[in-house]
Image (cartoon, rainbow, N blue to C red; front, side):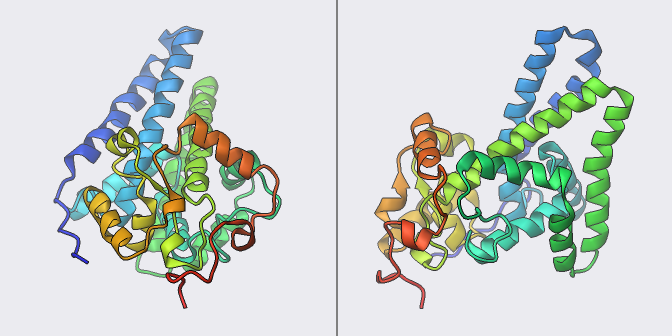
Length: 298
C-alpha cells in the first residue's frame, strides 16, 4: 500500500471550518441581550451546526494536525476542544483508547449490554458532565507523556471553567451555550454508534463502516470512510477514498459494511436505532460477520 503523503503545514479547508466557530461564538455572546426569543433560538441552532461541523475537524486534527507550527497547533487544539465542549487532551486520550480497542472490550465508549441507541447517546454525553469521576480517572491514569497532565488540567479549566464563568455572568446565555454543547455531543456520540454499526473489533476487515455518501464526505472531510480510518488512522482525510479502494482490493473492506447512506441520513438513523433498540450488544453473536472469515485477525 502507498504511504500517506505529508500533510500541509496549514490545512486551509479545515481551518476555514474552525474559523466559523470563531465568528459564531463572539457573535453569540455579544448579540444575546439584543435578540428576541426566536433570534436566540436561531443563534443556538447555528451554533449546533457549527459545532457538528467542527467535530469533523477536531477528529481529523487529533490524528493529523491541521496546523503544523507548534504554537498554532497548541492553540488550535484548545479552541477546537472548546468549540465542541471537550477538554482537548482528555478527549484525545479517550479517542485513542477507542482506536486501541475498536469499540470492543476495553473501549471506554463501548455500548453496554441491553442499551439502546438513544440511551447510549444520552449516557455518553451526560455522564462526563454530571458524573465524570470514572472518565477523569481513566484519562488521568493514561496521561503519562510529558506535560499531558498539565494540559488535562488546563483543558478542563478552559472548557468547564469557561462555561461556568459565562453562566455566572449571564445565566440564560451560559445555560443556552451549555445546551448547545450537550445537544451537539449527543449527535457526536450518535456518529460513533453509526460508524460501528454491526462491526467486529476482533477482525481487521470489520472495524468500521464505510459511507460512500458524496455530500456527507464532501462536507465532513471524508468522515464516512471509517473502516479505512481505523485500519490506517494516520492517513490524511484527502487520501481516505483511495485508501479505501486499496483496502477493498486486499479484502479489508466488507461489502456488508458499506452503505451509500450517510450516518445522518434519516433512513440510516432509523435502521441503526431499530437494530440497537434494546438488544444485547454482543457484535460477535448478533452481527452477520463471523470470526471464521479469511480476513479475521489471528
